[in-house]
Length: 506
Image 1 (cartoon, helix red, strand yellow):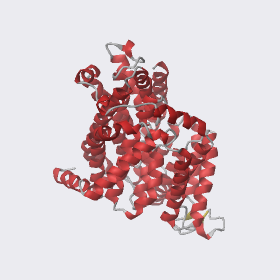
Image 2 (tube, one colour; image 1 turned 135 degrees about the horizontal axis):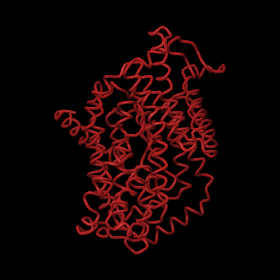
Image 3 (cartoon, one colour; image 1 turned 90 degrees about the vertical axis):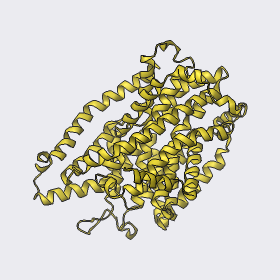
Image 4 (cartoon, helix red, strand yellow; image 1 turned 180 degrees about the vertical axis):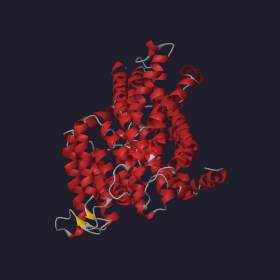
């Protein structure tokens, strides 16, 4: 982005209505991230239908607030009651809860907030500076390369899954849903089973809400409410003052600027890896901080550096995960997979040409990500820190009833179809049973979103090449992504094992 575009983006974000959307998104993200069982992925899935009436820039600004806050706020319950609000906060709970038990819980949250703010802000800046290079590289990709790129995304999403066979089934389910409706190249109906309502296909919002929101609501409805009442009672006993949340300069120096920088870089580039996500980033950064520390024996005893490292990394992931999503159409994690749905609502397909044709509309999103981390995190801690601990006291029966209503009405608002509401419920029930058996929802959504593109690029290439498949191996860009697929198939499983080993040792 040039200076003029950055200035225009800052002015757009600073508009009163845009700031309001950013604040709303941020505090929705805090609530969803701090409540065990809720995630920023679910929050964006619920907000997706509401974005229909917004300009694109404001919708993305709000989603960035949700995204950054949702990752950050998982540390609150991880530290106070030893239950991570998000998977990326698992490593934070090791040191944070140890500090909590010796009466330094507020200070632990302060360390986590400062680290999250640094990681998120620097990650957003890296996103801004790397985007121009990504644009130049993306413009070199032609149609055969685009197919190989989408194929790469689908294969990598299977590779990073714990159970690859079940990931293939989930992906196939998504691809099947994506083929329902009219064939865009031949205008022939497919898989409608005699239902005229299916001629136009299944709306992406319907599938996202069903797969992420409805299925999660069913899962949470089957959890005993007694567990959450205990959490509420434990949180009710905690009382902190604002000054307790801010560590001294001496304590920050003890953590060390190298820890912040190194963990941020680790988090950003792990975020760039398709599907790696905040969990892997926090594991790797924690292990790296411990192995390079002059006092590794302090880790596990309530050491602030053990909080700073994973929190820097998991918030830096936010900026990194947007790089493959915007330039290649590959989500870096579950939240960016749902964020793809926001783009599709506006008829925008992330890919090689996006950052050249729509950069002015996307620039406010970058600035909003930076503002959420650099300004809203420390400001919110100062203003509302003592009240964050009361989030887990919200009556979950009322909360989930409201979420259920918002989810199903959101589908109707997006499609104006009772039939689509029924499909959302059916997909939600199906995904609940699939998740219960270990089938991941992200490959399903990726199949829904990227399936049509994969089919389009494949058929277009074969049509132009008169059915000759060798074009995928003779075109340099296509060959590059096919080779990259093989490399990732070998390397990513090893990286997953290393991160799991780091988690066990910690």
